[in-house]
Length: 279
Image (cartoon, rainbow, N blue to C red):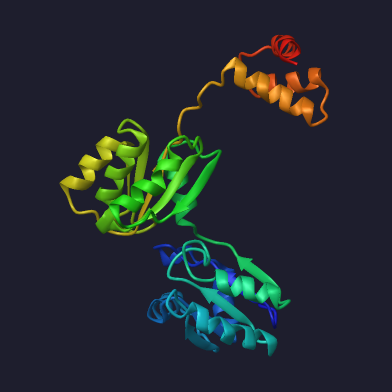
């Protein structure tokens, strides 16, 4: 049950309404105030779920988030059960909600989350690209120059990268990624996730550019890009790491052992001897 005076963030289906959790359905029926990114989509969702809402429904999106956060705080102060939902997935993650979370916590109100569908994790799991370490980069800038500038620092990123994108800009963004990361970099484009026409297109960035340019890309899009291949550190760099750890108070032999453990093919005794020579 929703608690009075608590701000609740609830994940909504990213396509298929059958993915709605029981907790979400109960929360929609219990909330005194529902802040929705798009009230029309919310009304459609509750009809599909056959849920009867009894609370006030308030539009809460990027253009009015700043001014309406105060309304949410007032409701919390009155002990109301306040729920935030967005069009799809989890509020706050490339969606409205962060202002409310920050304001609520600063005012001493508890914030809780009802987990659920995630386009990021769904695309990552289906991509066929290493999921053990990843970074979420949100929407790339719309303009080509700014997009190239945002991608440049990610060229050496070794973690898998996940991006959101508009279908209209997918081809241009893939082209920018191929220019920045190299056309051979493995990637995947996931669109219409959990919907009837779901598609996961895998290949190199060059191959995905060709695919996107040949036809119209439709639906919500998630792009997953493999991280850069690790660059082997030089012996000089490794010795510098050992000496830095030793300067911070670690025993030289222990420092050499730890650095060697983090870099396959490097012997601890060799690093220790080199570090002794450099001291």
